[in-house]
Length: 273
Image (cartoon, rainbow, N blue to C red; front, top):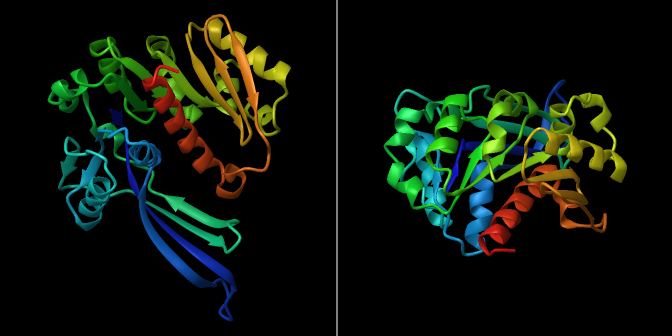
């Protein structure tokens, strides 16, 4: 069971500037239904996991299309919160044909806070039936506190996207079986500066951060260090895995690498690896 926000992605690929100042020549525009939780659920469905997900969706055209896309791709999102007074969050991106981002914008409110403890309590049977529960870091403190206390007999996985959200839940992280985060977030949680994470860390730097995470009471963590480097940490071991730099992740970018990696981790944990 995955719990978190979803959104609409609108991406325009451009060939260059038009003859009119400030305008780009759009060659292709795509609309897709995403968000990290949606992407992970999609990848799990392709692995025949049959995931369930709880989103916040609008009752308008975009919200209905988002939920329809979930159904078509094998994601059971029937327990999502449908609201009439909201618009579905939209992420806009303008990029070159080679994938270089020219400009991007997203709605500040991704609606995750609408998944309140009161609403989640109405889905208790859904939570009770889940052996794994994955929560997104933009859920409110109160919602994450509720999930991590009421359903601690399940394997709880905390999925961190942004340091500014994750740091709000610092005193709850030890409740989770596994924390998945970027190296930048791990570094900042342990007192390091964000600027130091701009360059790829070496093995000693990664081990130093992991030791600090262990001291914070985090039992298991998976740290996405770079496109070809992942660190697996438990209470007594630190394992750094490096793969060839020539990979699908290099071509698709960090978000693909992050979400596909998380899906593979969840799949492996469910299979007992």
